[in-house]
Amino acid sequence: MGASKARLLVVIFVAQLLTSILPVRSQTSPSLSSRIPKPDPNKYQAIRDGKDWQNPYLVVRPEGIEIYGITPSAQGIPVESVPDILEHLPGSAWPYGLVVVVSDVGVLSSRKDVPRINANRSRLMKTLKRQGIAVELWPSA
Image (cartoon, rainbow, N blue to C red):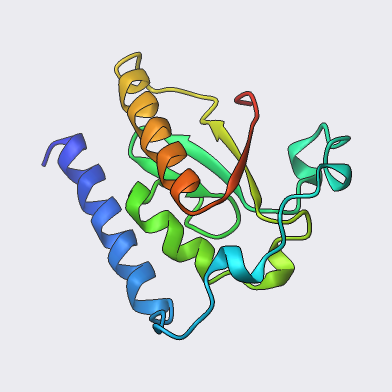
């Protein structure tokens, strides 16, 4: 089996796993933007190190998006899965309000990864904007 097929299978497996373990959102549950306050830059503008960031931290990878500390480490999930995962995070996961950090993965296995990362970032940014989630773009590590 080729490496790309193996990666695709891993992404599908992770997406299915997350779908099966996360509770299904009911139509009566409040949306993320209605239960989490607007971003408060005064709470995070002085943060300079990723280890100090307390809100969700999203890493754009060639194979998808990693939500640091939530999805499997060093693996990407489909961009389309991100809103549902963020929606199910508790209010305590959003101490700065409705804002996330987005950063590209720091180490590439090939230059061929760059267009895939760019495409995933573009789709992610549009998805987050539709959800009313503010974004702090940070440089890759």
